[in-house]
Amino acid sequence: MEIFTTMCLLTLYYGFFCLCKLVLQKRDQSCYMLAYECYKAKEDMKVNSDSCAKIVMQNKNLGLEELRFLLKTIVNSGIGEETSCPRNIIECRNSTIEDELHEMDGIIFDTLDKLFARSTPISPSHIDILVVNVSMLSPAPSLTSRIANRYKMREDIKTFNLSGMGCSASLIAIDVVQNLFKSYKKANAIVVSTESLAPNWYSGKEKSMLLTNCLFRSGGCSMLFTNNRDLKHRAMLKLKHLVRTHIGSIDEAYDCCIQAEDESGYQGFHLAKYLTKAAALAFTMNLQILVPKMLPLREILRYLLASLLHNLSTKSQNLEADGGDGVKLNLKTGIEHFCIHPGGRAIIDGIGKSLGLSDYDVEPSRMALYRFGNTSAAGFWYALGYMEAKQRLKKGNRILMSGFGAGFKCNNIVWEVLKDLEDANVWKDCIDSYPPETLVNPFMEKYGWLNDEYLSFLRLDFSQIFA
Image (cartoon, rainbow, N blue to C red):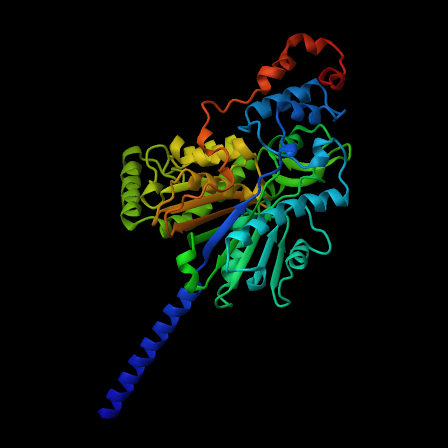
């Protein structure tokens, strides 16, 4: 009997030991954001309506139909007069390798210099993991090697270069970091997120490929993460949930957002009509996994009961994932702030409507798009910076980041705010003037004459008119 009792006690002690070890191990695998820095271009890189028209008119392949399409697209884009482009695009010339690397160095080194300056006592020598995501440029040596060389980082640093991941690449980079944190204790990681525009300006006339010229602008962000609990008191955010969805096995989804050449041999980025359907499908699949993790049980039960009653009353089994027009999940029961990728006004408005968000909820994304344009994977952090500059982020709040990428991918992250945040960051010089009274840009006022009917009967050299 004593032997049996001893065996039972040993078993209980061992089970308790394993449980404690598991809990402690999970605590060490937490992912904390310590700081981030967004890029703000110099004044001579800004693109207003006049300089934008000058750039557009350097494309001799454009006719009246294409110009009218561009006018309509830019007017409805949600982009303002303060966005920026690489210098070779402003100077209307093809890029060289020096232009491409100069663009990357300017963004990456500017944000990293500021990040290390504000993140003392963490210096470049304390960085264990470095992840860089740039979808459209992959030089040799790699961009991570350029960073390691510039900041003289340790020889045992783990570096990763992500390319071709699209506008949600920074969320994928964070997923790489959090998975590495499971293997490395008390580690510090840097994620650099930007995009290369210098060599990727489209000079053809295909409408589906001209869209990127209208939307994408210069931008970038560098972020510092750790799983060291000793630094938790310095952390801004804690990663709660991250869900990635990839529907590249569907041919239409794979082809809807792809780098290609047009019939004339001009290389660009093709955006197909199936893009909206692919986004809706991937977003729905992603939320089906994420929602049970981020919403309270009472809201899920309410939704299930309301959906059941709605089905019985309508005798219909064809409700959409959000419950149709009659029943929707209230995401605000589990999320206080929504950070939709500022890829375009249609994307922001579409996701906002599908989630039942107010103008207040989508304001950060709209303002990030208006002030900085579509900065690809860095766009999330300009929207987050807007929330912080407006002093919206309070301790205990949760933030949902949602984005899409070529492939086709949908990635969502939920963050927990660890302390009240109020740094004006990249918005410091202009936050008091946002939101503006109107988001209407002056393109229609200045170039609305392109829609005049009489132009259809004339043969004009538009480059000379604009000049």
